[in-house]
Length: 250
Image 1 (cartoon, rainbow, N blue to C red):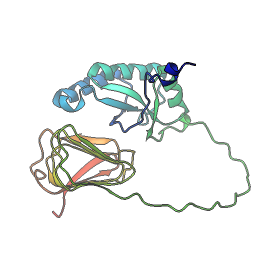
Image 2 (image 1 turned 30 degrees about the vertical axis):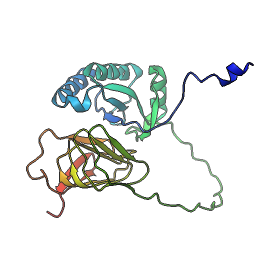
Image 3 (image 1 turned 60 degrees about the vertical axis):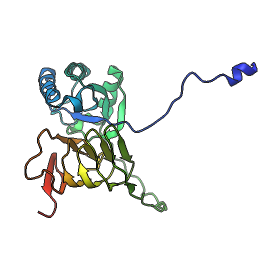
Image 4 (image 1 turned 45 degrees about the vertical axis):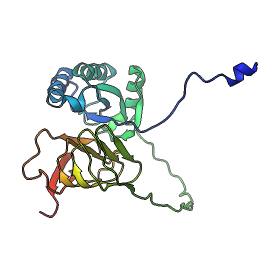
């Protein structure tokens, strides 16, 4: 091999980084209904959802879908203007559908199947109880502190921890945490807590003017801020599948 060949620059690089994904949990296999409702949602907030990458979650369906039905849903999502990029991690059925449709299974979105037949049955056998293994010492990850304003187009992500922003989050900016998000200023952009599915995560802000708030994949878009929340200290949390908001100290 010549020296020129050994020093030649590689034609590509592979890097891994945080990618913001919306999670679309479908409750029907009616592709036309999904497309119509998505198109209406995108029309109301095109700056937030147009060509947004989404992970498709099948766990809320009442019955097991087949690959043809999921393909129709994926096509409907694309026609509505969003970009489905994978399926949420679930069962062997999800794995098989993903292979058929040539889509990845995204393990950062883990779901529980509603129907027992979606998962292979587990055979119970008598086994001796294993000896307890020594548990490694667990060190907590410190909260990520961000002291500068988060401006339009910027994104701040706190991986495996909470995020504290001591300044403002501007319109068009995004703050994300696997834990809770605390904003000690105005929230005018997007706030995403529980990014990896932590349903106990919360969003807190000192001045509520949000474009979007999301917790564990459940989100709400604000075109008009409710009068009782506008500019007030607010917290958001999940109550089942419902995203709740309340003034702090009210």
